[in-house]
Length: 325
Ligand code: SF4
Ligand code: MG
Image 1 (cartoon, rainbow, N blue to C red):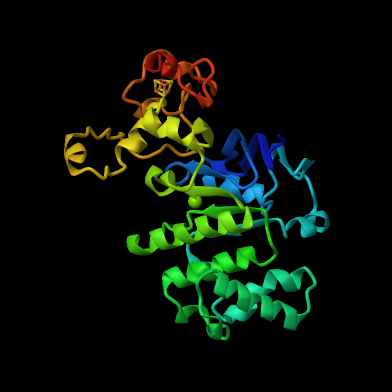
Image 2: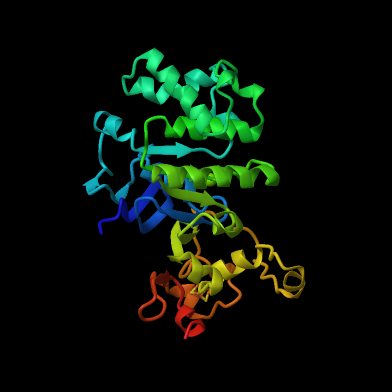
């Protein structure tokens, strides 16, 4: 079947300067993936790897420099403001920091109703719908005239989710929706998002900086490093047998529920921070930090390709196939 969302070879280049000269920064460098209706793709990587930029291109808050984004069979990557307006109903975003993404001078009624007012709904109807959305997201509708600072972080994120749901979207890009919340609250928000997905048939692009958050919610997972996807596949496969050394390192940082296994487990520590996308390393851009790097890795960039015959998983590493007989 045709996927709800199809991203092909998308790049985003921002203008930049280095040493007094113009030096464009490629924040996203040839990203491709599909997302089926009603499913979740986890998009994982360290900060600065291009995840948020990718998410913003998909909801068309940003226009890709090159490449295509096909939503529901239609290329939306070059649409202008006017053509995008009706599409905003379908494509919504939930942001990382709920408090800073909500206008502190607006009541919850106004915040949640805003996307409806933009689409032309009358004020009374939009307010009624906002109250329903509060109920649907576990908020108390009687609090509709309160301001964001009167809510906890978890409640504020529920407001952000209610706002995203207002127009009845089919796809939500959730950009680290629980990263700013207490661990105890994170599970509640993830549960809420799962319930809403079941009830409303939503598709999620769920962005996170570690693999533990998306483990439960995603069907497929894509791992990004320095603007590129280095591994993508079905969740079960990637978590059970990560093929890319970067995925292996990220996964080794996820705590295991069994304390004995947790103590026995080997942690892979990566050297240093991710390099700047303004000056990416040669060859495989992961090579300065890769525990398995060989000579070829300095000069030749590995392509994303199927790691083993018949496997629904792709990996960008010269040696991934050898690890995966
Ligand atoms: Fe490591 Fe080389 Fe594979 Fe890159 S291509 S991930 S440097 S082993
Ligand atoms: Mg980000």
